[in-house]
Image (cartoon, rainbow, N blue to C red; front, top):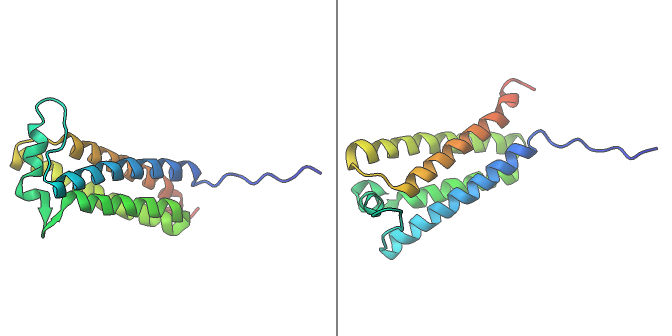
Length: 147
């Protein structure tokens, strides 16, 4: 009698993708957090003035906490949700990525319409958070439908 093969978890692919996105986003946030506390200007392509302008704006911190550090915490939460996974992890990943995407949209709005400069690192982080939301949504849909 042949051994029974266990089917792959339906969360396996989204879990791995979410984990990779969270690690890459965490690296970006860690770099921006480090430059904030070290008083350095982030390295950007071109003149790099956009990154410096955004990072030195009054919107770069909330109640004295650098926005990049909040991003690092969010990406850490996504790593945790990918490790935890199952239903609780799926819902946690969805919640974190939804709030992160909405916050990233707000920050991108500020960059464009208030600050008047774009930070490439911030835009990359926002795109990663949107991708994480898509991934978490795809994992959560079957649960929300009761399957």
